[in-house]
Amino acid sequence: MVDVTINGQPAQAAEGTSLFDCAESLGIQVPTSCRKQGKCKECIVEVAEGIEGLSAPTEQERHLKGNFRLSCQARVLADESVCPTSGTYAFVCQSSKGAVGTVVRCHTMRRANMRIERHAFGLPLGRQAALEPAVTRAGDRILIDGEEIARATGPIHGIAMDLGTTTIVLRLFDLASGEQIADTSFENPQRFGGSDVMARISYDGEHRGLLMRTLAGYLTRAIEELPVDPRSIYEMLVVGNSTMRDLFFGQSVYSIGQNPYRSITEIEMAAGKRTTTSLASTGRRCLLPIHPRARVYGAPIISGHVGADAAACMLAVDIAHEDRLIAVMDIGTNTELILGNRHRILAASCPAGPAFEGGAIACGMPALDGAIEDVALSSDGAFHLGVIGGIAAQGICGSGLVDLMSELLRTGRMNSMGRFENDGQRITVDAANDIFFLEGDVNELAQAKGANVAGLQVVCNAYGIDFDEIDVFYLAGGFGRHLKVAASRRIGLIPNLPDSRIVQVGNAAIEGACIALLSRSRRRELEELVTRVEHCRLETHPSFFDYFVEGCQFKAVETANRGNPCVE
Ligand code: FES
Image (cartoon, rainbow, N blue to C red; front, side, top):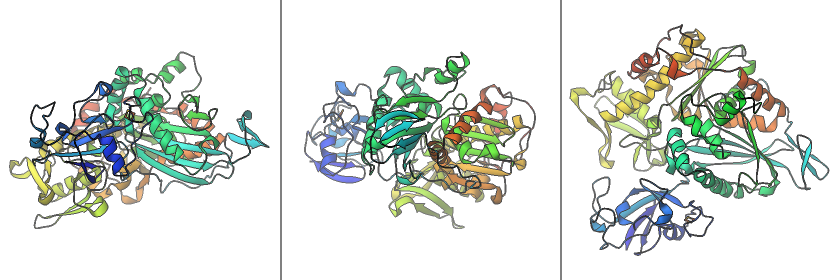
């Protein structure tokens, strides 16, 4: 028998048992549309430990790289089996933490306990949109923008979706009353195609359509679990960065990965082939179980990598009616920045990479149970840690990394250049659980931070303002929501503004998506708003590199330099 742990649940599996069967025996639902035939490609698992203890990848798994396997194809080997990849016996496979033994540890692409930001907070409440959805009913006729698409007597529903590179959030509404009925969230299963948008673009080039089909399978399951008949869902409004949105709609994303980084919709609009960058399709074409003639609307993007999620944030913060100067910063693998008010709006996107989501960090991990999220250092040098779920620490998530660096900086154990005291290379954070922090990790985080700060410098610079002229600084997104503001200021991740001007708003993108779903006039406002935004191209700004180098240092960010336009 072999020890197998799936999604943190331990089991004993006999030789030849597939990981899929093993998961089923634990009551874990693995997505599938082909009943373990190796055809649907939905049953992917990520193997964190003991991949050598599994059978060799099959022909059906050719599209998967690294530690990803199809759970219906990967079978556990007996202790005495020869490992096909390493040529060693499985029972001597070395685990990542140095232990020896036959242990396979993996998780499905839908981990139930990931902390995903579903809500928004602290947004302006001044102007509530009247309920005027695109979907209406006249007797038994169901209409979209006045055009009949179905005949039915039951309720009419709609879904707003924030389709992120890492996480996906859905909210279900009764369109007749505007009431939210349910919400759900899960990790984006496209992770097997890489953690950032550039990797996904390249993956889609090699395996066209596979990312879209995999996502559709997961969405189908999520929609079927909602407490309404899926066929009563007549509209779905989708926001997401340009790559995620276009992949979902089956568009080619090749051009988003090539300089000058434009969505195919932007290129077509520039050529006069379309009048908006928004997209529309149907439930059937998007392979979803909603009404086949339901409209699936992809909100317009701003430009380049500044996508429909950033556009939705603008709606949520009501920038079109804002007199104050506001900034919105959504920190992620791709950080989006918006700066302006009703008179002028600038936007930019910074390729910060996955470090602040725990990627590329030795003991980094997403915000799952077991992730260290709070760090305090006492005067005797002892670490005091807060762990999500209150269980033994398994790694450090983004907000924990910010805390950790802030505390190391405060106590002099790390200097502003990111060097550890006494030329050390490694700091033990939790000896009992073998959690440590490397100087190499600091370099990764410095670069992610440098990209964010440089982006902000360039945008403020193009606007002709200093940071201290920003009246409200919205920190959007799940990571921004859980950051400690003081720690973020100390390491220079956000500008040195007083607490009263910093608002952690959570998932503003899903809030904007809901507004656009429930109000046609606000949707029109969104369409008009994106055309007014000046896109600030960081890569062409003459001072970007200087700002980046400066931003890699761990010190408070005080002022921006005015001047040098970089907008188009
Ligand atoms: S269950 Fe369909 S590929 Fe594994």
